[in-house]
Length: 91
Ligand SMILES: [Zn+2]
Image 1 (cartoon, protein in one colour):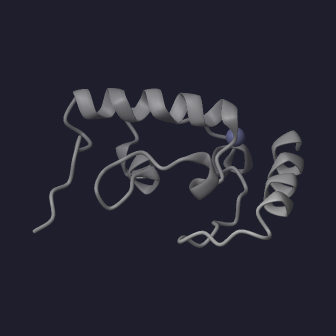
Image 2 (tube, helix red, strand yellow):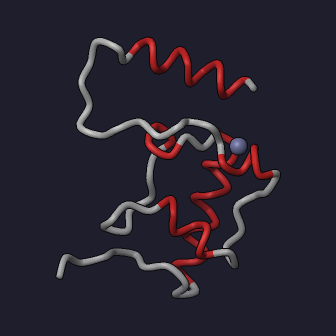
């Protein structure tokens, strides 16, 4: 709930600015789903990577601060086990 309020504030602040990306729905997928990020669940984690394999920030994915910390750790563990790529090179 606290994260939703923060997101609203964040949007207000950015109203005058133009960003080169479209905001996601900004509701934490892990809070609503009642799950926590797990390194074994690489298919879910792959939704939070950019097309170059970088971890998306909270502003783009809408994940709350608590779950972003766990998500980052889970993605790094999955990379170490070669479940996720460190980098995706353009073809
Ligand atoms: Zn969350």
